[in-house]
Amino acid sequence: MAQNGWDPQRLPDLSGRRFLVTGSTRGLGYFATEQLVRAGAHVIMTGRNPNRLQAAHAAIERRVGDASGGDVETLLLDTSNFGSVRAAAATARGRGPLHGLLLNAGIVHPPKQRRTAGGHELVFATNVLGHFALAGELLQNLAVVNGRMVWIGSMSTSLGDYEPIDVELAEGYTPWRAYVQSKVATTVLGLEADRRLRDAGVPASSVVAHPGYSISGRTTGVRGVNEPSRMTRFVDNLQTPFSQSKERGARSLVRALIDPAIAGGEFWGPRFVVHGAPHRGRPAKLTRSPELGQRLWEYCENATRVRWPFEKAAKARRRFRG
Image (cartoon, rainbow, N blue to C red):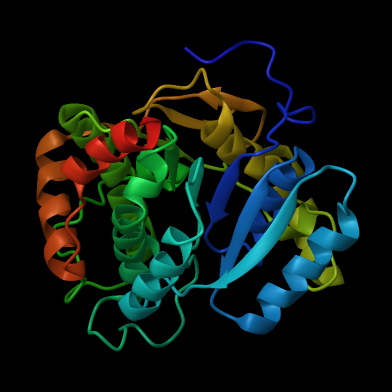
């Protein structure tokens, strides 16, 4: 059970702790990074666009500075591209243990191009397959320090039956279905990962978190990171009663990542679902299915050709202690 009295504006001291955040050049990933750095953490910021990554890095330095004791480094990573995932993972592995892995990168509004170069549906590859592969590649870095991975779910998973039967959406494709199905799969895999970590005796945990309805027009303007138009601000502010800023949405993600009282397999989000302080919730019934977890896990293993090294990760902690 997570501790009471959690204050997202006064996080625990994270000095000496290392985190990797995917998709940290915009939105939730950027603000989660900023919150971690303000608390003294070292964060590896990742993104697929080098210019945006540089701009986000500069924004952290400008807004946080050196006063917190935290710092950042950058790493190119495109989660839709398995080659990019392998290369980034190899670099990150060489940089030492990770106390946390925030699997945040994702597509909400799919572009016209529906398939990756490898033939996978783009949203599923970006939101699910790339993160599955990355977490597997970095499992030992997490295990040596009892680290935690956080998968980003969505409140949309409770809005209908979007079971990933046709995972690649060869038929019946719609952008909304692609997005919600990917978030169902993400939540399922986050819960399945924790079951497997426990069964294998790996000293790492897996948690799922969602940001509620967090929108850019209600979010602080940050040069090079969040620069909504006047029209976007006007429209988004009309949604004030049932929305929140991305800074606030990132608070649930950050708490899921760093609160030592949170146990593996938990599901976190805003207290009032669409907005509010971080609060433990209950994932949609569909996502709690072990059978679906088994099926999706096997699919991801075959699609990515990544097998999580559970046995090596369990031994890695013992070697690190020695």
